[in-house]
Length: 287
Image (cartoon, rainbow, N blue to C red; front, top):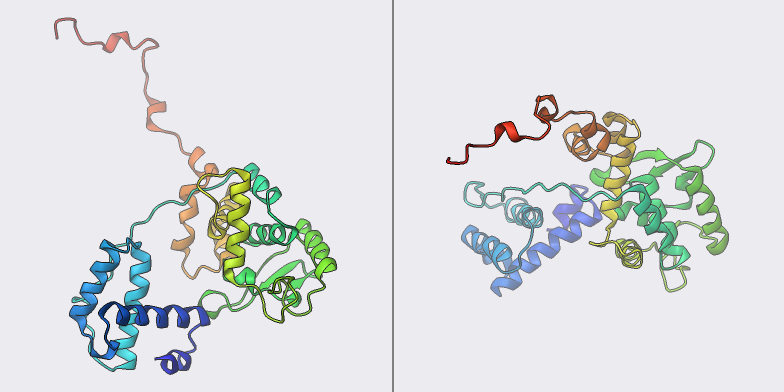
């Protein structure tokens, strides 16, 4: 399965998730996965919802991994009608105000965590994208940040905030990173970058110290980046390019979150002519 994934140039993150999903599937039944059939997949899917309490998106990802395993690795038939993907529940994310984001940044546990939180919000990058930024990705001449190998193995560029640039220069003067902008290791001197979990911890601890409830996540800052841009007048097409969305439908979520868009639409209640006291519409006493 690993060879099949690598031949198709799947990302490291997808390969890791797919292999972990098939291993978990086999572990649940205490059998080699090539001995299992679609009816086992249905039982496993029910178990993920009923006992593990996983969200529909997580279950869909695991089903996609099993589908790849049966179709591409074992060359077996896979009927979508037998194991349909679960219906997604689309919830609107919670958006922090700009004041709350400022409080989050100021509450970071260490200077290293602070620059991670700033980079998340300033670029709208995904957690893994921030973790793998290189020193050469910061282009101060053109004032852009290069995001390399994002979702779908696509590169893109986002704006480089002058405030972020100043903070990154201070960060560089402290650590002198050579290749990776955010090196791993206890003292951040490793030849390898930090993992996404470090970015998550930076955000989580800052949210706790800032008294935000529920605690903010890196992906929530990505939503804040896009929503605040739209509220400031940035058009959806530009936000789509900055976020690296393939379809504008994904980006249209921020129409539902933007106060500028919502406040520009009047409620039909405002067009009604109502009496000041409301007494005219009271029912008779004997009604």
